[in-house]
Length: 236
Image (cartoon, rainbow, N blue to C red; front, side, top):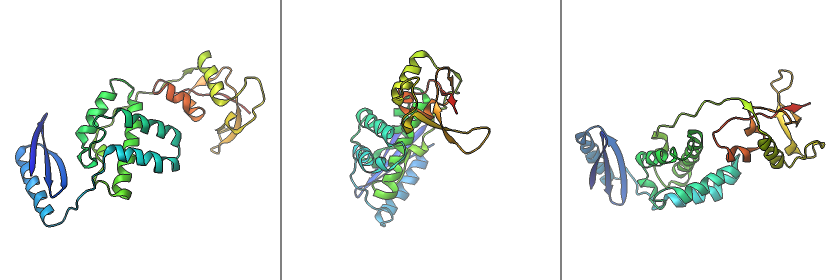
């Protein structure tokens, strides 16, 4: 059975038949009717298989527990996944019912609270979850995040870090100002003399200009998401 819902200047059509759910948007209701008739026929002839009854919450939790630990940046990806699990609306919605409109509505609400760069990072995580669900778990058939327009990131600007940021940076690195660096976390890869090959050099942030803090202390980036890019200077 097909249902039709007018959303703005488009018609959202959903087909549910033999436990299979499909949805799509069209300019006119007539186009939607033709598509629905075709999908219903394909379902009857066995072209579409029944999707599992897994929810968005299940997918996020499984990705956090099984997939994220194997990926680069797993610490902060796990933080974002937990945030999505606690804040996404209708978290127990079936994966097959999550459509681009659902993602877009959530995106617009998030943009009222955080900067576009933060929203884009969260969209990246959501997209990775759906890609895994489609390709590996076979929990759904499409990734709706790919059909949603991304917000434009603000232009980065350079500035000097403040004394408070300098203190936070040192604490995050576990580095005592004035002492000799004692562990790998006190070093940052940077090109030297125009070389394209980074070498590890000791961090010095007494009068650091601001342009790449994300390469040194991700935790500080998370605390200041989307504000500025901060650079740490370095002594050979």
